[in-house]
Length: 263
Image (cartoon, rainbow, N blue to C red; front, top):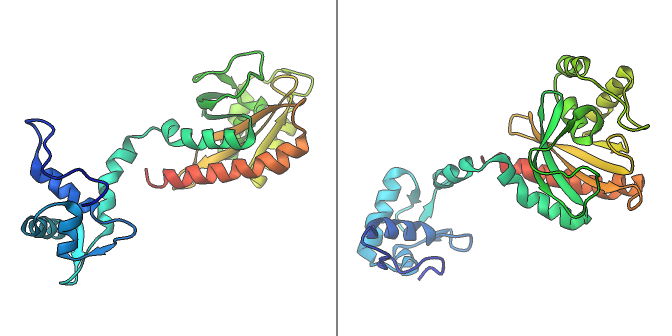
């Protein structure tokens, strides 16, 4: 019997549809180690009589989920459709969250994701390790994009004319002595972010706060969100942020993008 399924005839309630359960058991009979199965193999692994297995296999073949050479049966790529409904229902934060948690464990730092809302970034996912800002950050917290690593990544992803418009209409006060406020310097920084594919901001949003961010891209290449790793100047040097955290960050955003390809 397939280790991944209960006996097909096991009814949980009066609403239990045995034929549906058996059909799913036939699909689950196939796995990475059993890509092709004979009728008797399917019957044994699904835990159903051979006659029933034959009917389900022929039905699945007619629907395009199974192919056969007359002796062995195998699933077709169309079975992926059965999982797309679940994946499509996942929101962007739900797709990103396990990746953010992994990145936080690897770096030992707080990790967040944000999207652009006008001239601000809005946090949509977060894995905090310690409080590194005087202001508490939760889902929905917003900060001015021009002074944050995630904001610069998201602004750099816009068409240049659109980024210009955002910066032209948004106030850019000096939040610390390090904050870039000069329009020319901000434009140059956004161009550098476009070219290198990531951003580092050091003490521009709050004194002592350092962060690196990279974009998460959709299948069409557009940017869905930005992810960052945040740390403090007293704990991590800029060199460590650049040489150790940025490569892990880029691996994480690439992994998220790969997941989004299937959503």
